[in-house]
Image (tube, rainbow, N blue to C red; front, side, top):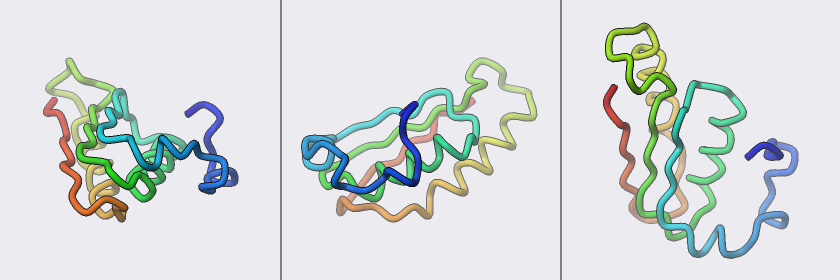
Length: 95
């Protein structure tokens, strides 16, 4: 993830096991960073057998903060991502 960027996000540089075996991914500490959203989009669009994607906000313990609205905005950006797999269960942990 630290080395991921849109310029190198082509499938020639991704291990085949990532594309054909990844069934679950947990995106913890998601804060709306464009870099992380691009990676999440790449995963959703290219993993062929993905069954479940979990997203957790950065502010997991703070139930009454403004980050709740920001996470709602992040969720609205993630839901329209195209998916390579036929069915992917997307879970957003509650804050």
